[in-house]
Image (tube, rainbow, N blue to C red; front, side, top):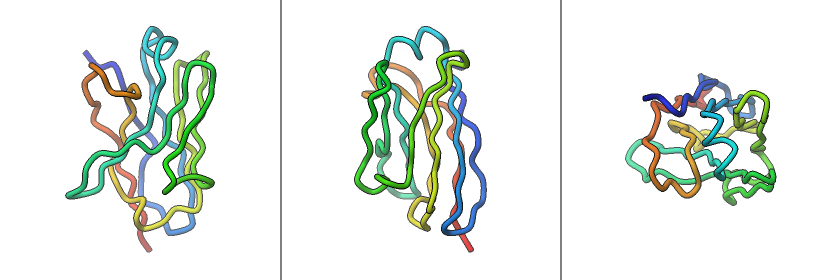
Length: 115
């Protein structure tokens, strides 16, 4: 059963912007802290941003000041607004609970930053 669906990735030039979306089930969205993770080729999957049920946020130092995580309760959706994108931001981006205790990973969405 599909519980997490990421979208919004694509090819963007350095310095550009993208907004990623993650649609979750209502029960998951309302009960858990949600996070955005990314995995570059040959690298470990890392948490880059998270937002709890009180809309408190945290960011990895590598994206702080450039990325913004937010949530829409009506749409059961979490977003990642990405700006000032760098080549090193290239990765497959996934959403999941934070920590990722039991949910399977979705397909993710590819973000490629290239000139």
